[in-house]
Structure formats: structure tokens, C-alpha cells
Image (cartoon, rainbow, N blue to C red; front, top):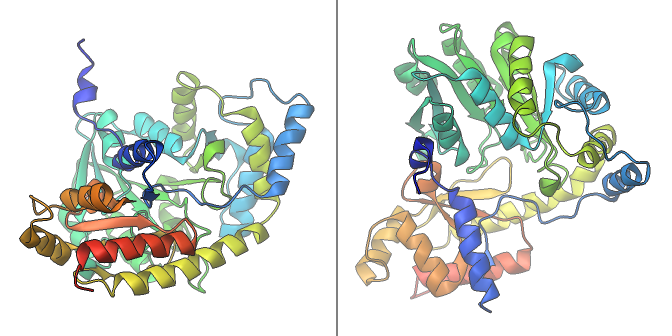
Length: 401
């Protein structure tokens, strides 16, 4: 069968591939611990579930406007004003089937052949492929451990040019959990101001899973003079443990761009699930109190996992400021495993396969996120299960321990 050309320039999501392999192994009766998937292990708060049940009972099961109900758009507008001190109107907001869908619509509406999109690496695995699907060119910029895995103004300068159409910023970051400070964002904005055709896509999906005492800020907060070309991507998946409900949203002062995204959506998926939209209204209008216990648990796990990882021979893990991932340098561990004959190639993929096949721990190799010789694990699971997994990783990488 001859598939379309676009199928030969993209790949399956590596995180989904690892999770799928681990799931097959579990079905075969193997005691696999999966530290790959990016979703909270908590249940959706009860008041949100009750809103969905009420929506079903009240017959809210029909089509809605393709870009979302006015009630949900208003809840999003209120959220931006209350939590982010940003003013939007309902016609500057589009609701989609998850934050991923919001980004897809945006790139389809914004990017043409020849356009370049700057993607700081490590990045969320889907960014480059979604740029390719829009016929754009992903420009991936390696941001090392020495950079705290964040793009610097100096590195940004080297890739900005007349073909640059957009840049991704993700804070707190998947996969690193790193957070851009006000000063860092302002310094990046000072470079982006020089290129008035560049759009800034700020992916704020982990906004509420923040471990610092500072309030969350994005580039829209520190550079209001370029607000017209900033697109905020967010959703309810991570903060409210609603990954399966599939509600994300985009906000932009450029109404023409939002309308274009709505047109793309109207000819592909049409409206997001009506029941999930009602649940999202309850989530956003209900405040953030229900997030506090989840965030506390994530912080406790983070501190424990980082401490344990840094005791394993060959691993260097920086502490993060948010999200629920540890992203660690395992280059020395790869060398050691290669010398022992545990792996046949000096790659993080080989090490990840070794950990899964021999020690039944599923991690995602850093190369999937654009930075080799690293590994990402999710600590969105219990401390007990994390300790079992870390015991296995320790045994695999430091047999003499």
C-alpha cells in the first residue's frame, strides 16, 4: 500500500511506543513498572466528575460550536484574568480536544513550507513531528545540563532569521521539569522583539504543578509589548488529572489566527466532547484547591527520586522546579553498561531497552526528546512503586552496590 508522503517524515510517539511495549509485557504476566507515561496517577476530583454526570442527565450530549461552548470559553477568560493577570475575550480563545490538538491546529493554521520553528531541546516529543506535518522545518536547539536544559539568549540569536515563523517555550518543561524565570523570559523576549514576524508558542500545560514559591509567569506576563504574537497553550489534563477527558485550549490576541485555527478544527474533528467541556467548566470555575494535595505529593516524590538517582553510579540528575518528571544524564552509566557487555551500542535507547527487557522498568530515552545520553522517568506513581523501580535501576546500572 502506498501511504502519503507525510507518513515518511514523522514517527510514532516514543513515549506511547514504550508504554505500549510495557503494556504488552504486563499482559504477558511480567511485573513491569511503567515510568514512561505523562499523566497524573490521581483520580479526577469528584466535583468535576459530578459536573459531567449532571451534563449527561441534563441532556448536554449534542454538538456544540466547533471551537467550544461560550460557558467554557468564559471560564477560560476568567481563569486568565484571575490566575495570570491577562485579559482575553471569548473570541480570542479556542477549545480543542486536548493541548496537543490545540498545538496541531495552531501549526496547521500558521506554518507554511519554508517556515522554520525553533524548538529548544529537550522538547516534548510531538513538537517536531507536528511542525513537519505542517510542512515546516523544525530547528532544534540543544540545551545542555550546563544550560539547565533551557534555551539561552545567546543560543537563540544563532538560529533566529528571516525564515523563523515561531518558537516553542514550555515551562514547566516536559521532559525536564525546568522553569524559566522572569529574567530569563525577559532576556529571550528582548531577542524576539528584533524579529517581528516570529510567533511565540508558550505551552503552559504544567502551569499548576510548580514547586517554587514564586508565582507562575510566562512570556506574556513579562513582555506585554509582543502580546499580539504570543499564543498560550493550556488545558485541564495535568493540573486536574483529566488526561482522558481531552480538553485543551489556546488563547491569542490575534483573532484572525484563532479563527483560522477554528476553521481547521471545524473541518477535522469539529467540537470537543460536550460532556468533557461541562466538566472543564467545573474544573476551572472550582478553583485550584483540589490541586494542592497532588502538587504536594509530586514534590515529595521529586525530592525522593532525585536524591536516589544521584546515588546511582553513572547518573547525574538536576533538581526540577515543576511537572512530574526527572530527566537525567546517564552518559557514564551507558559507558559502564557497554563495557560490561550489558548493551551492544552506546546509546540511551539501548540502555532503555536493557532496563525494560532485563529489569522490567520502562523509561523513555532522552533521544526521544532531542537530547542523547539522557533518560526521562515519570514519578506519577506511588513512592512504594518508585522505590521498587529505583532498586531495579540501581541493580542494573551499579551491580556492585
